[in-house]
Structures are given as C-alpha cells and as structure tokens.
Length: 289
Image (cartoon, rainbow, N blue to C red):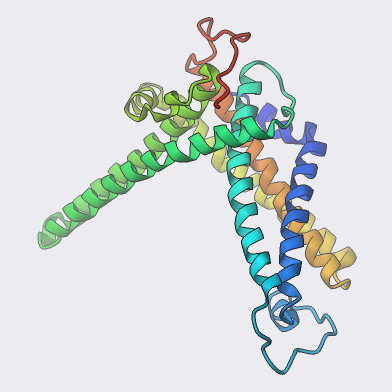
C-alpha cells in the first residue's frame, strides 16, 4: 500500500471535498435556523465556545413551535439521507481507485443512496457478530472472575481475543465493501464469514491497513488543530463567523481523512486480489431498482 498516494488523494480533490462539506453545512444550517428561531441559544454558545455574542438571554422559555418541530424533522432527514448517500459515495470512491482513477467520482445520488442503504444493512450483521463475541468474552470473564490466580491471564487473553475479533471484523467489512464495489452485487457485503476468511488469510495486509489508519488519524488530527488554531488567531474575535469556520474546517479535515482511508481500503482490496483479471472493468454495475 502506498501511504503517500492515500494522504494526497483528498488534497488533489479538495474542491469536491469542500463542496460536499458546504452542501451538508448549508442543509444543516437551514434546519438549525428553524430551531434557533424558537429559543435564544446565545448563553449556551457563549459557554461552549467562550465568546460573547452580545445578545441578552430571554427571561422566559417560549413554547416549542411548529417551525422548531419542522427543523428537528429536517435535521433527522438530513442525517439519514446524508448517511446513506455518503456511504454509497464512499464505496464509489473505492471502486474508482480500484479502477486506477485517483479522482473522486461524480455524484450519482440515486445509486449512491441505494448502495449506502445496502452497506448500512450489511454493517448491522457485523455489529451483531461483534456484540456476540464481546458478550461471550464478558460472560467468560465473569465465570472465571473468582479464580484469583488466573484473573490476569484470562483478562489478557480475553483482551487479545477481543482486539483480534474487532480487527478481523473491521477488515472483513472493508473487504465486503470492496467486493461490492468490484462485483457490483450487494450480496458480496453480506457474505460475512467469507469476508472474515479473506481477512484472516490476508491479515498482514489488514494489519498494515490498521497501522496506516492510525497514522492518518494522528496526522490529520495535528494538521486540523494547527489550521484551527491559525484561523482562531486571525478571526477569533468575530463570534459566529469564527465558530462557523471552525466547524467547517473540522468537517473538511474529517472528510479528507475519510477519503484517504477509502483510498487505503481500495489499495488493500487490490493487494488481496479483488481487482485481478476476473474483475471486468467494463462490466455493468448492478443498479438496484
């Protein structure tokens, strides 16, 4: 896997990254505005961000209006729709990189939504399996808790098993996503045990993927903090403007880290053979009806 290609990938597609963040920010801001019109939130904002907006707090709490209810409903819809769309679009990015294209794909809203929905449904199976493994481990720890001499050994063994289980399921989920991208069939993401077997067989590549993902988290975290501090120094006295820019910067760097991770996932998929000659680049992808 090429770490430098992954980390430069979102920078080469910065315009699309920023446009996605701005579109989501505007959608959220519209519905938040409907809620904000009902109450005076300045004391809470001042407390959280340490700024004085110069607005006196309302002495009485007004009733929850229809506009506020509509705002809450809008926020819920935006969260669900953007979640499904973003998952599907991320898989399209994996598909694009697997095809040798280092440009973020165009938005295909309907297809992205369908792909994202199927990915979300398949992720539930992985979460259920993970919960079952952790439940068994906790039950085992409870049964052996009275054996004082074995406590430390059992706890360490359970911790190792838990970490391995989480890693395998995480790699298996990424493999399912990549197989879905390569094969164009959502059933690939549902084949949990086959994906786990592939993850186990290619654990070295998965371990490298994990290390690179940790490195991405550290690098983007540091860069995000530096940029946020620099912006705060320049426009820290502008109240809501500085707060808004701080939020936008936060989400831009989070999104860049996500797409760098997706690039690594695509490289991992190529490394374990999911983009070999049996993957036909021209094969029409399944479009769900």
